[in-house]
Every structure is written in C-alpha cells, then in structure tokens.
Length: 252
Image (cartoon, rainbow, N blue to C red):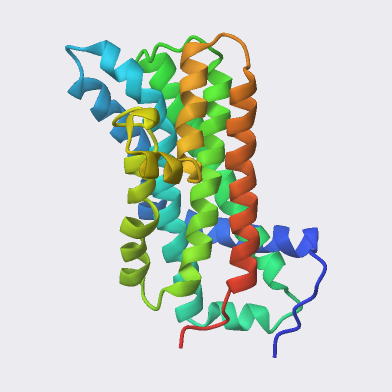
C-alpha cells in the first residue's frame, strides 16, 4: 500500500531525479534523441533554406522552442509509462515516496537534460548557424528551456492515460500537433478563423512562439515577453500538478 505523504520532500525528489539520470546514462539512444536530434533538426532546417537565410531567421527561433518540446514530450511519456508497466512505479510508491516526490524527481531529472538540450540547440543556432537575433540569445535559451520543461510536464501527464508505449506515442497527434498548427508558425494567429484564433490563445505553444518572436524583434525585454514566459512556465507547473494527481501505480 502506498505511503504517499502530502508534503513534498526535496530529499526524496532529488533521490528520484538521481535514479532517473543514472538510468538515462545507460541509455545512449535516448540521450542521443534528447541532445543530438534537436541540433540536427535545426541544422537541417538551416540548409533547407540555404538560399534564403531570411526565412531561417524568421522561423528558426520558433522551431528552436518547438523541437525540444516535442522530444521531451516523447521521451518523458514513454519513460514514465515504462516505469509503470515494468512494476517499478508500484514498488517505488510502496516506499515512503509520494506522488509529488516522484513527479518532482522526474521533472528535475528531465529538466537537467532540458538545460543541456537547450544550451546545445541555442548555441548551434546562434553561434554556428548564424541565426540573426535582435535580442539576447540568453532570452532565446530561457524560452527554449521553458518549452522543454513544458514538454516534460505534458509527457508526464499523458503517460497516466496510456496503456502501452505505442499509445503514448499516439497522444502526440492529439496533444502536440494542434498546438503546432495553431501556434502561429505557419501563419499569424490574427489571420486565422476567429474560432481557431481563440483556441490558439489558450494553447501554451502559442506563447512560446510569441516569446521567441519577441526576442527576434526587440532588443529590450518587453511586457509581452514577460507575459509569454509566465504563461509557459505557469502551464508547465499546472500540468505537473495534474500529472501528480493522475499518476497511477500500475497499468491495468
């Protein structure tokens, strides 16, 4: 029987994070997916628009936030589901380890990976591929990191509703693709059908893309940028709380 405690314990959360990071260290394919694939995708995009660098400048920053969100969503949802289907999660929750401790531990572990991922992708885009940024590249890094954390939170949340790794992947069209289509990457949101524009206003990826565009266009930190960062961070925190509330010990 779970001895779930109502108070979040930093020590238990850190211990969980350490265990997850040790597992990742022995899984080079997952590490490659998390750290190398976003860099390769950004590089591929740069040379797709080799004859039109302005297009890369226009959409490169947006994709710098979107790619980490997608990869973190995939890896986190599958990794968490694997813990449950293998019985590891049930054994852990039989210890003095609360659901909040477990979710916080996963968030810390994948958050550390998100930092490395965002650093690599941002550095590659700005200092190697020549992404033209008017504002500070560190602000790009901040938004990319928040996007990766949001992807982690979404992955933890949807893993509670999947019975297999295949089902976890199937959540991607339902959770990620609508945000991708409505975030303003393909067309400005104010040019969409009013219903779609309203829907896009409640999707966190829209604010991630808006935040990136603020960095591209302004040298200073604007009020809109503050709003975008707070919305993405708030959504990530909210989804993490929902993930803790819906976490199941086993797959039935």
